[in-house]
View 1 (cartoon, rainbow, N blue to C red):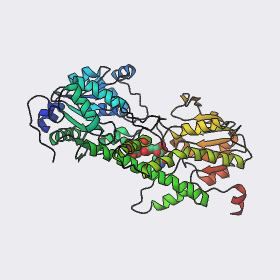
View 2: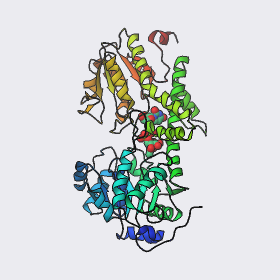
View 3: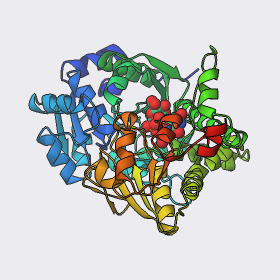
Length: 473
Ligand code: SAJ
């Protein structure tokens, strides 16, 4: 049972939950969102869209300027641009580079800064610690701080809380409120998710939980799962992501196994998916993005500190991180089938984003695929509709699929962008340097159709038949 703290007069933390929410709704209370990236900007926009006064604070002046012009840089988040434009125009959302001033003039602070892992796979909390130091210096009694950034369980209680208390000379749970509400949105679907996906909230005490839960329920209209404390809320967020990473690793392990057994892993998984309690996950080029490749290490670090080092989630990371190497193996096999080698071949990589229809290459496994191909002596061209004409991984992305494929000895499907789900395989076969190879690392094409178009085919987890075997099968 969390200790009930005494309710005092000033500041929303010292009001009843209903009074606090009323103040936000009638504009007498306002919110600062620190960090206006792919989570922070939608968070600020959605609170502003609910009629709350929001100040978005970011250290990047260019981000501040563009938002105050009503612009949204995330072209792949449907609906976000219109909400930003409308809420800025109506004065509900404004941006500033002065975090301290924003904190001193508002009532609640939501932290949405990045929490990456460094090259040693060690969580890098410098951004959240830096933000907490700045916030702490301006923190007043009665304010509430909410951590939406993903951190290891215990980090809010053991790292963020002491920083806020040290810088503010205030006490969490007594003078100010502190809660975790880990972000749970799917990049590319953030606005719909923020309207429908329940939020998990864990606060330092019951009163703070009541205010924060009431605000998210009333302002954003979402259901709230009330966790016992911030540590538990962060454990829930990490568990759902690590569950996904481990299951993707299992799918990748099935793919590697079934390829050797001449069994089509996609057919197997789709068959399994007909059973009511099977959750399909699919093999591919590997696991990328700002979340899954990093989240495991937040928990692994806590495990190492507590003396219980997890095995399965570490093994899953190793399996997923190995998939780009497997893609190279498939490219080599397919090129060998047409008498070519990786060295000296031209490879067209179609899709480098870490997942379909999103403009984001953070920790994309295709970076390793492109690098390894170049290291092995291939000439690599890229086409990705989200990056056409731009530089990605130090490579100029072609402006069209045809430009990338022309004269290629091998085509690699790296991302399952919608555009690649209806490829004109016969048309491509006239553009490539025949005989050519086709490696599908995201299982968007049908093996038989690719082979019928004259390519030497390989796919992650896919069953394939070489032309001679096809003839006799
Ligand atoms: N991937 C596979 N096989 C699968 C699913 C995904 O190889 O069956 C790969 C993707 O290609 C990608 C990576 O894994 O490279 C991550 O895919 P993802 O769909 O999990 O995409 P994310 O990283 O944007 O995941 C986010 C996460 N949201 C948060 O962390 C708040 C995740 O928890 C969500 O499940 C996911 O969005 C979603 O689909 O909502």
